[in-house]
Image (cartoon, rainbow, N blue to C red):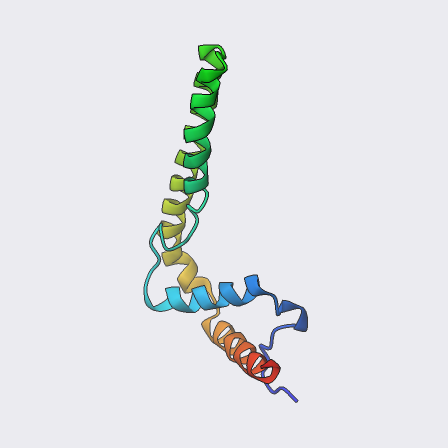
Length: 119
C-alpha cells in the first residue's frame, strides 16, 4: 500500500508527465534559460521551411506582395517564440515559489519506484 498522500494517478505514466517532473526538479536548483526551456524548438524547422519556401516563391514568380506577407508571417512566428521563452524565464521566479515542491518530489519518487518495478 502506498502511504504517500501525493501519489500520482496511474494514468500519469506517460512520457510527457515524467519529463515535466524531471525538468521541474532540474529547474529547482538552476533557473532555466530561454534555450533550456526548449520552447524555441520550432525555430530550426521554421528556418528550414523559410529557406526553401521563399526561394520557391521567387522561382514560381509569385507577386512580391505575397512573398513579403509569407516572410512577415515567418518572422512573426520566430519573434513570438523568442518572446514567449523570455517571458517564461522571467515568470519562473514567481512560479518557483508557488509550486508545491514536496509534492513534486514525492511524485518523482513514486515514478522512480514504479519504473524500477516495471523493469
